[in-house]
Amino acid sequence: MRHFFTSAAIAVAVSAGAASAQNVGIATSNPGSLYHNIGTAIANVANEAGLNTTIQPATSPNQFIPLLNAGGIEFGIANLQEVNYAQEGKAWFEGNANPNLQMVATLMPLQEAIFVRADSDIMTIADLKGKRMVDGYTAQNTILPQLDAIYASAGLTRADMIPVNVPSVVAGADAFMAGEADGFIFAHGAGKVREADAAVGGLRALAIADPSDETLTRIRKHWPTGFFSVKKAGSAPGVLEDATYFTFPQVIFTNAAASDDVVYAMTKAIHDGKEGLGATFPPFKAFNPDDMHGDAGVTPYHAGALKYYAETGIK
Image (cartoon, rainbow, N blue to C red; front, side, top):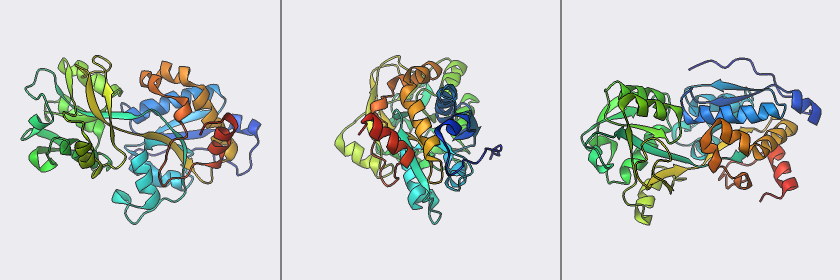
């Protein structure tokens, strides 16, 4: 795990003016990952708003969430399912609840796929049976159930594949580019997908072939916040036709001890920064600021975020 650099502690009582000068950290996954791209875009608009924000990458949210829960860093980028598991101490957080986690905002949905070479004979998720597929994810616990969910859409399990063990999604993409795996899982829009697309001469993103209620039920046994959404042909590397993909909410979150003023300032910066967010990271063009106060399940919203939503009428 990459170590976090020092991040100034946020005072319990801080004025709005002090919030503007406060140094704050945003924990993300490694460079090349979607969460690093998202965190970078948010840091840019937060800096323009005066928050002096620094990106602090780790391999995965399951590594930085305990630090954030303890107040060692102010913000983090992750998916809602993982934050809720951490909040309650479930799944890979079993016995290690993180009750201080609080929500700041729901961001644009994360659309995810298994990618293969465009010139391969793998046309569907069902065609992955017997193929070499990334597995393991010892440093990124959130990925295995996501793989399980995507495989379940085609009636498959991880046992149907030849496992290629990797620690993280970035390492999985590297294994694919090195010819060690026939496919890899990643989020649409991430820089690493563009790198892989260029490296192998084109990707194919395998779609959900049957986006029915029955398929969704199978998927949600592995990933309860999952749903389906459509991407248009050519909108991202590997999307060769209009197709449906596995999707779930992604969020920015904080801890209960974070200053109301700082969280308010971050919430406002994100809400007001749609144009700048999209300029830094184009997938943010799908972000709707009016949806920031989304259903967060078991994780409560921070008082600073709620104050901003109340003032702006965002429900």
